[in-house]
Length: 134
Image (cartoon, rainbow, N blue to C red; front, top):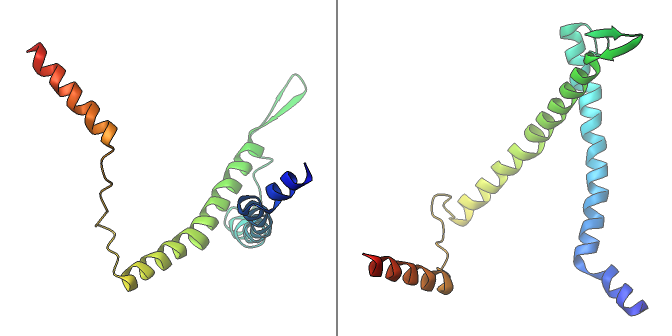
């Protein structure tokens, strides 16, 4: 029983996942700092407010409906997505493209996968049945 648990814990997938979670949490702190300390103050400088929480408040039967909170969350999401795209995705794509050029791998040339023999057989059967019905 303990041997099975030990094998499960020491599998590469579990360790890789644990490392990914820790790195993801650390990277999340970097992205959050970028958004809160750089991008949101920049927007506050342009718009005049660091968030839109007080924008679009409607009172209905004594309850506040705060559309601005939703707007702030949407802006924060878009800023985080933009930060990840421009700080991680774009540089990573450039690095992959440079590596592929160095290795002589052309992005236009894709290796054609061998056709599955069962799929080829089913296609032949379908075509034969269509010929019989004519």
